Amino acid sequence: MADWARAQSPGAVEEILDRENKRMADSLASKVTRLKSLALDIDRDVDDQNQYLDGMDTDFTSVTGLLTGSVKRFSTMARSGRDNRKLLCGMAVGLIVVFFILSYLLSRART
Image (tube, rainbow, N blue to C red):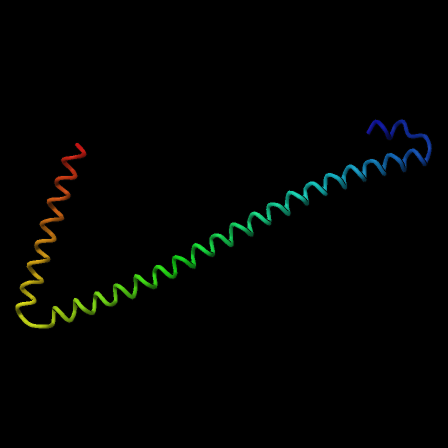
């Protein structure tokens, strides 16, 4: 701003305006460069996240198939006679007992 007060001729005013214009153009160029690098980083991040989500989709599809097959086998076993039901109830009770024993042991180990 002090340059404006010293400017006596129209040529000096043009030179001051030209310098200010170049300074502002350089500032704008650096900001554009930063914005471009930020946009490229976002693009790479989005690509990585899309690949991760595609992998999760594949994993969930395979798990869904596995669970569907297990449920079908379990339903078939539960429907096939009284002896299988007794075995199924015994396994369920056994798993519950094992769960409580493990939870008790883990709680004792933490304290």
